[in-house]
Length: 131
Image (cartoon, rainbow, N blue to C red):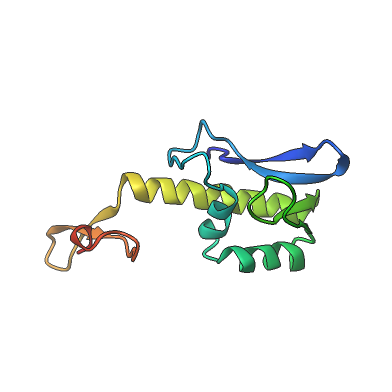
């Protein structure tokens, strides 16, 4: 499995880590003014505020408010087994999203033995690409 997200030590505090994106490995491009923090929430199927609550309540993250040039608050984490499991989950979800982008369907046999193309359920896909 590719590692799309990694933990980065915060220079001002050796006990805290931020989750960062390997931009060169990630095929979805956003403009410079976009925030890659939101992609983690979307991969979890959550809104960004709910994602921050999950990070605080389940992963014991410290939420850093809007400072200086940052657009959104963001979580900082202490290293733990829960965080390592979350990183595996996040990378697996990114792998799945990229695979669905490359192949938005699966081919399977129906009851009569014919092969059919079955599109994944995705309400974000334009209607003409859904079955």
